[in-house]
Length: 77
Figure 1 (cartoon, one colour):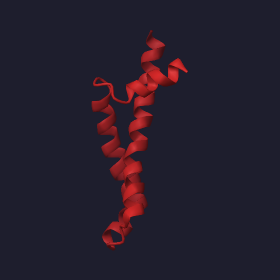
Figure 2 (cartoon, one colour; figure 1 turned 45 degrees about the horizontal axis):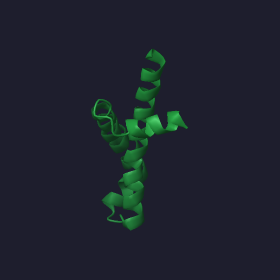
Figure 3 (cartoon, rainbow, N blue to C red; figure 1 turned 180 degrees about the vertical axis):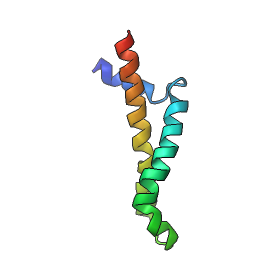
Figure 4 (cartoon, one colour; figure 1 turned 90 degrees about the vertical axis):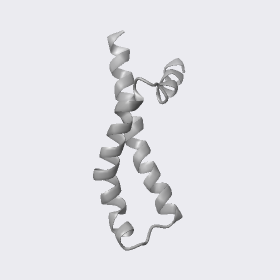
């Protein structure tokens, strides 16, 4: 349980956030948002549910990047 709590704290770690945010914007925008929601955005079909899904699209790469940084730092200890 300690490891899960440490990881949760890392989600807001000032040292890890800049990299994770950059990855989230690039991966979320290019690979996920455009692929999953691009046509709906162009056609004007973005509803509430699609916008929520789009938000999650950016959240996932952020969490994955933080996890990678967390694991890397944990192994160096």
